[in-house]
Amino acid sequence: MDALRDGVTVLACMTAPSAADAIGDLFAMGAERWQLGGMLRAIVEPRVVRVLCPSCRKQAEVQSQVASRIGLAHSASYPVYAPGACKSCAQTGYAGRTGVFGVTYVDGDVQRAVRAGEVGDAFAQRLREAGLELLRAGRTSAEELARVFRQ
Ligand SMILES: [Zn+2]
Image (cartoon, rainbow, N blue to C red; front, side, top):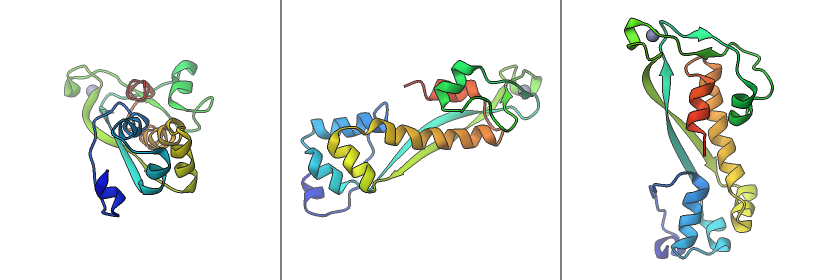
């Protein structure tokens, strides 16, 4: 925190359930809301998502409960896929993993949210948008995103 106060660029990696929790931890370490709002430049929130097996994925409807959990409005305007089962994926429906990165640059709106202690929505939205890009590309399932975004 002292380095930040002196204007030094600090890249920090924290383990926390979400970006909002990480900011809460920074407050617990002694950062004041008004200081952190002005010093924070960006937050990268990573998640690991299983990739659908391209050999057996199948087009599927998204259940409304899952759609609301991942921030998908009503029904998708593009084909959504669910896991199948085949020999090449050992009947799991998934083959490999990829990263989803919610990148939030801290602009005036986010700075105000940090100062007000209302950061959860700002960061969660960026991560969900990144996850929905994978769904739109047919690379993962809605259920997998719901699992990853369960916090
Ligand atoms: Zn397969």
